[in-house]
Length: 415
Image (cartoon, rainbow, N blue to C red; front, side):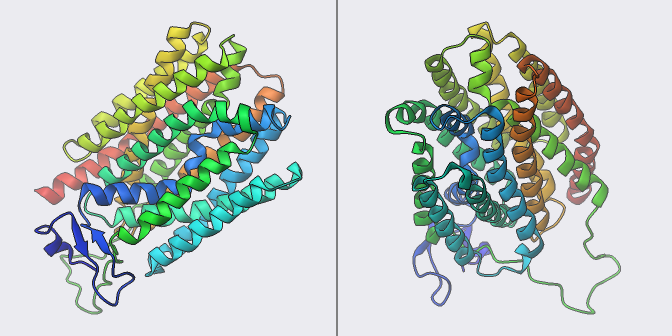
């Protein structure tokens, strides 16, 4: 384990201390390279979310499933992630050899993808993807907890979105055509490739140890024990849940939404590639603003823009508006999520609340497609769903007092 104080004066790569997890060189803990590797670690268990439209479309067209059936399978995957994230949130601050745990989770997740590809019965997809989700959710929870221990968690969370959007952009561009040529399970090969790359990166990440527990009977009255302020934390987690729920409800069925407005598959595929690629700028902007400005101002602006951008999907029959709506909401999505996760991570130092942030995020991602699938199959229209999603996103503004509370705490600490 490298000494964080010494690493500030070292190059980007340092050599692991003998006797620790690995003798391989590791990147400096506070470097941009470390943020990138942690971003891959925290994205591997959740990459399928970024290509959900391709998976849903492949299951509906290639396997002949209905909206509701496709929604059930994607729900199983993401609700499994919810279970995994929730379980790991309670024990993550006790996992000292987290890199070993992450390696096992990656290998087991890959085995679930291989089993999915070789599956002969579609009915078994639900339990199989549920198990995959549990493993992936636990992996993301570990990744978020480690990020919370880093020197710049806001930058790391932004890098997570950059990695996810970049992978999602190329997935949207390439995978639909490959599905048409090679079959329904092409997206799961993409998941295998992403997990394999992450597994190869894992040994080069630093140790990021748990914070040392305070010595007994040495606490001074002027230094009260750290306690979690549950009200602002729960409001933050609720807002993160609503934000992911509303966005994913539309995103998972974006191809079907476009078709309902008369748009062509090729046009939508190119649009989503461009939108995901441009949306990376939102995560980059979040990485820049998170270390320079208070939370409240940028967050409220981004949330208002998200609501307005979602409402533009009502006019998706106009190709220019469809393109602009995807770009605008993609940028604000990539901007807001790092802010919410950073807010959650600032409620403790061991990373447990950051892991709970991952739990809230994945709960929203899981429930959005499920509810949307049943809503559309039950006779609802995409126009109605767009308005409902915008209303839910407006409720995320309830998190602004929590953001102001954290800003005030930072000002007091810096005073």
